[in-house]
Image 1 (spheres, rainbow, N blue to C red):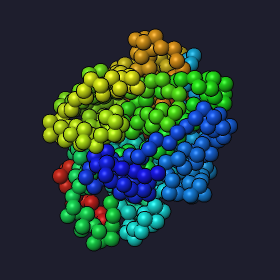
Image 2 (tube, protein in one colour):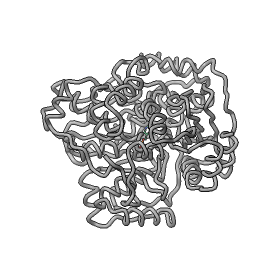
Image 3 (cartoon, rainbow, N blue to C red):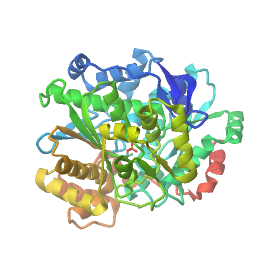
Length: 495
Ligand SMILES: *Cc1c(COP(=O)(O)O)cnc(C)c1O
């Protein structure tokens, strides 16, 4: 299968090239030229398999230039062994009637980013070698908190790679910051920036678009790559768990073959929910994709009106991984909604860059609203949802997941839709101990590890070992810089 760019349909690259390059040279995102199909029979067959086998099946539909053995090895390295606490990388928990939580945070960094970033290091260096690249791969990441740690942990000491992560100094939780600044490994670096996530993401995009920088780095023996969710290698492992969740419900007799279900996704950069859209386009019986936002509700407004408008106040919320006003992966959806029109996608992205706004026409808006329902809630509502969910079901959710649960409740009230719904649970509550304890009305100790212990006492859910282990880990990366200095810092790191 070939890949093209959302901004230039004449481009043709292989999956390996798409993953190594991360972003197309003219600024577009790589997308497969065809949609692989998924039939009811496939789903029945997959429902008899384990997660790792389902993963190999799905990946092999998109990543046609890896052999089945290579994919199986990468999948086993990512999801097998002890990487994922519970054995099952993506277990389903039942909440109310017809309501399930897909827990995607049992990996080493306790957030759903592990699902892709444990796998990507098994794909990327081999792909670079195969496509004839002799250079060391330098991975740049802008993070709103979870991607950074997951990428660091995935690429730590992977031969032939270096990784540099930028995070907004005041835009991540204390536990997230601690996870990153204590990162182990010889090929890693972490820098805070004085700005928000969009500043970090724009800085990284500018470095990717800087030809002088590319030439300089090439001379030094490096090629830049991205582990951000614009990389196709981040998206494709996420398609797996939508399909797997459906198969699991089939296997458990919770749904009948062909039954349509909803997915409700706490959304920031639109990567996770876009993977759900791809699963649906392949043939997964999905009724609606519910796009849940926090107070940074640019996507809610977009789905309601067809106008994407980033000219608004940026809020720092208790769900920091969703504090985003430019949802990069939306570009891939626009491309598909406009009938794969590179011209229209280019135009909208130029408008976004120049004015901060673009507008769908009526036909495009109709198409969008047939697939997506948007909702949002603020920090107080999310806190109430944490408290109520725990009271009703003894289930503790993190603030991001709580936004999704809240939006699902709104959807149900407004539409009366009774289709079964899988809510994606994207982080362990322990990553956001202060918010969760406060929501439950408990005292919140000042010390990070006293918080973990307090939360364990209240919830009975064991503290993830990877977080306990941070207690004695020294801070290796205290440095903070201005967004304008990011280029220099990259050059200083890649000596
Ligand atoms: C990254 C993240 C999100 C948002 O996912 P996108 O793919 O950016 O839409 C939601 N919740 C958590 C915990 C995250 O880390």
